[in-house]
Amino acid sequence: MASLTAPSGRVFDSLPIDSRAGFPQSFSVLLAGVNYSFHLYVNVPAAKIVKRDEIFDLPSQDTFLVVSVDRLHQDAGPETIFLRKVVPSIEYVAGPLLLYFPQQRVAAASLNGQGDAGSNVVGGVAQRWA
Figure 1: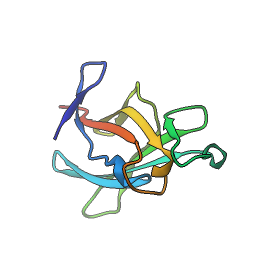
Figure 2: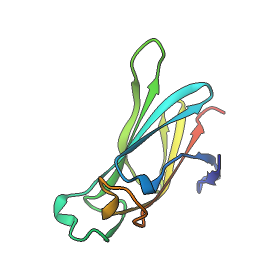
Figure 3: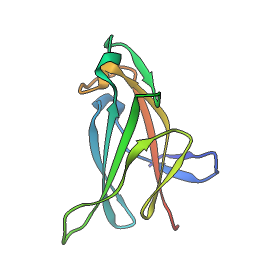
Figure 4: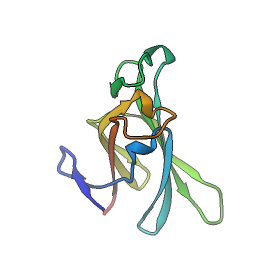
């Protein structure tokens, strides 16, 4: 797994975000023997989506990336440990995890669609107590 370094100097493992898969998207990550389910979606007012080739650099006043993380338990249902809009300059605490999303560029064509439309969303995860 590739890594990225936050301004704090902390190193994060890259999350398997596939910008070509479009948004919303979900994927699972196994970290320290625990399964986590990640869900990403982009909130964009319909009035802002004028052209399919438009690119949104997130966040803006009313357009942003939302990330949800569930810890998956074998004997119970999922436990949501993180749900919020994220900005590139902040490292977030999500229970035993740290999250970082330094690049958030999303094409209008990637909203409820797939393909190489120019989106580039990058995120990382680290153990909070490593």
